[in-house]
Image 1: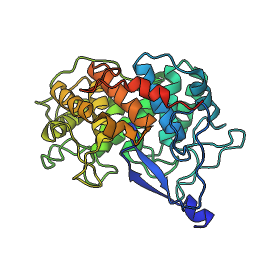
Image 2: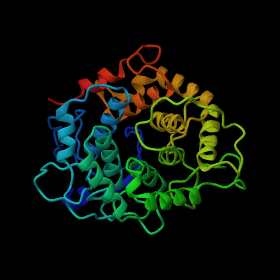
Image 3: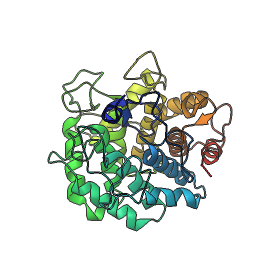
Image 4: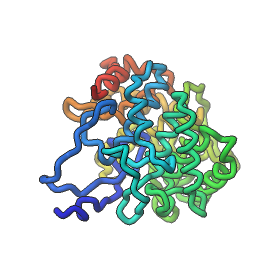
Length: 355
């Protein structure tokens, strides 16, 4: 496959990403050499398309678990920042300038990597690079109040939810941008007049069908910024059209989780369980302080299928592990003895750090 074809990207919902995510997947030929995971990054897999994303989610998870952070992991993430303050998915040579955003090819700085890196760095006391990342996001906000995956691309709910959460990590500087992003999500949500199965959920983009992952990531941004601590949850079973947006969106996820026994089906194949979306929904609900029964149900299912979610063979997915840690902490469950097998998810994640 030619080089331009290799760089052609499609966007699909993947279960290996953490809170999220719509990520770019390259069409790579067998002859294309994989990039080796560098020292300081979590995970052994090729970081070309998810390096900053998985690193950031892993660091957010470790902070949620109040775990000492390896300095090399922080310095690697800081080294990935572009001069503009934004982040690309991965820079093999951090000394080289970042490429300009190209929405058609899904290359250049993207909102998801930038948002998650901003939250990770802010939580770790790296205030200067975090502020630059937030400023880059605010500057790239679309006229409709949202963001797409690649900076400058058409807005989508998934990317807007994460970007809103990042802006809320430094709210005093970007209040107007926060208000516009919240308005975008409110307009995208299905109204009271929608069918019961869609009511209060959100689509990937306005006008499309309801999407559980989009709804979960929207709730994360509506509820606040990552990581969330443990908040005592209250029922949203009686949420009505007049209730605040955070309660209405929580109501949709509460109903979905309880209807699926904590096993949200994949948007790509409804016969398959999407553990990533299930965990992201828990993170959102814990941040909103909502739906205790749904949280318990989903945590129970995630605990029984921890390996299915966080491991691929012998390898650990740092993004999945980081998300699961956040879900556990938010639910008031010990991530170091998670599920019936009492899996130490924190230790699994730390062992994946490349030396």
